Structures are given as structure tokens and as C-alpha cells.
Length: 137
Image (cartoon, rainbow, N blue to C red; front, side, top):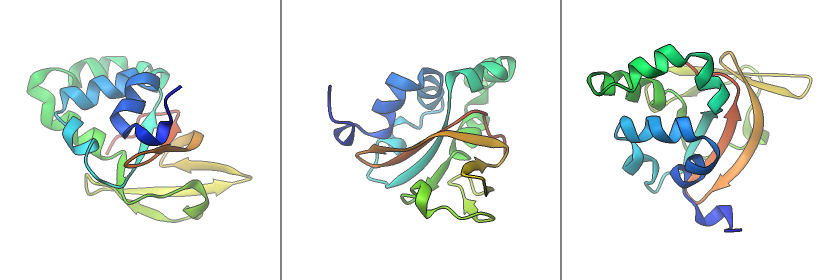
């Protein structure tokens, strides 16, 4: 298997988070997220997108490209924030401009209203944390 460190954020998402990868493509953010970074991406699972499928279908329409980009960039933070770097009560400023609140309780990390289900997936241009909900700005 290819070393994950040689894969950028988009390449990893294309394998493990197909809905996210499709949304990134539809929003025209592939080049951005393949850029040098580093980025920290809170990546919703395909199941998280399925939970809001009607909204996803609407956002994937070409006329909603800007709204989709707004939602996706709300999941991205500049810099590389590993799980160990996050602190309870910390606020992260997203690329979209909004803030995400970090909560750590009994070893469980939540970002906004989403729980981190897999942390510190290394990419060549950042780090990915898998979350169980889509964050809406």
C-alpha cells in the first residue's frame, strides 16, 4: 500500500471519504486542498453526509457552488493541528472565517457538534481528523 504521507488530503479523501471528495470537486476546491498547506481538515464520513442527504443534493447543484465551498471551507483550518495539540475550550478559526469550538471530555474530542472518530491521519500537506457529522456554518 502506498505510504499515506505521499498522498495529499484530496487523494486520501477520494479513497476514504468519497462524498467529501465529490463535494470538494463540485466546489472547485481540489487545487486549494492539494496546495502546500499545511491544512487541518475535519472530514465528515460518507454516513455523516448521508444524514443530511437532501441538503447535500441541493449543495452539489452548480448554482450552489459558493454555498458548498462555504460549508466545506468551514471544515478546514490553516496549519497542522494534531489531536494532542487541541485543548478543551479552544476555538479554531476556519478557512471559511467561522470559529469551531473544541471540547475534550473523558478522552472524547468534539469539534462543534461533531465527534472525532479517527484522529491524526497524516497527509503530505496536512492532517485529517474524521468526524461523524457535517458542520454547518
